[in-house]
Length: 78
Image (cartoon, rainbow, N blue to C red; front, side, top):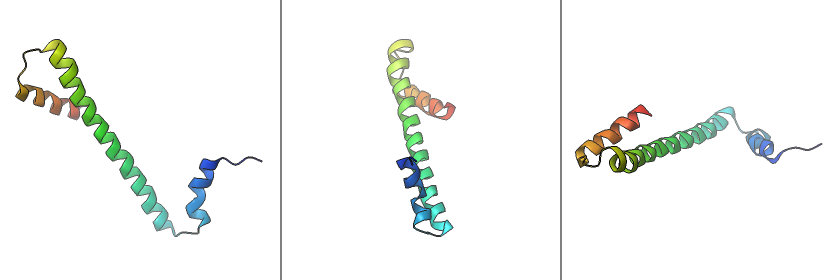
């Protein structure tokens, strides 16, 4: 019988007989880390699209203020 290592890692809190609230706290921390990473990636994507694609291709004479407005709009749209 083969047991995957990932399953063993996920079962560690139960093997250690930790209370359920500790397991929930660890899971909430992992979820918060994933959400903050996703938010940072969306910010980078919107900045890259507005600066690299739009400014160099479609709107070559755009002002810096309008470029920042486009970045804000794209980060809300995504």
